[in-house]
Image (tube, rainbow, N blue to C red; front, side, top):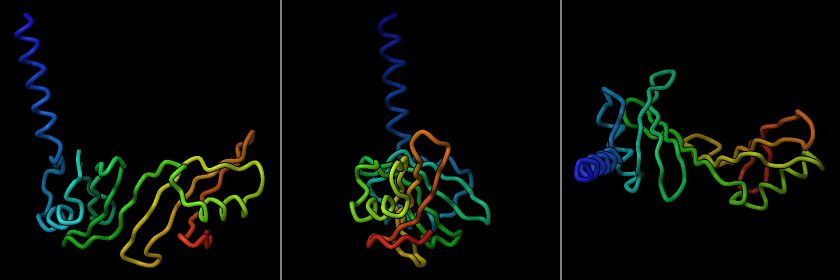
Length: 148
């Protein structure tokens, strides 16, 4: 019985390792996959989804962060979102948010975006006011300029 359980565990572990770079999108065009592999060679646990408008989104982990990257059908990279721990938000960005919102607010969630369009880089912060139901979503450039 122990051998059977050990064999089942080993098979599950091998399956997990084999799936680390697997794609669950049934008809993924080769160009987006090629661009993705070049841009994110250390990506793990990659899953592809087709988004609205025919865009393709890869969800994956890289360097300890959860990320998403969007591509057109022809393989053109459009943007990458990295889910950041709040403590990793640059001070100039968090200070801009708190200065705009005032006292009692805190950053609940943070994402860093890189884009092929302007703005090329920005942070999106989901903020909440303590002891209320008030919420705000801010888009802030790396220099602290608040866009929305």
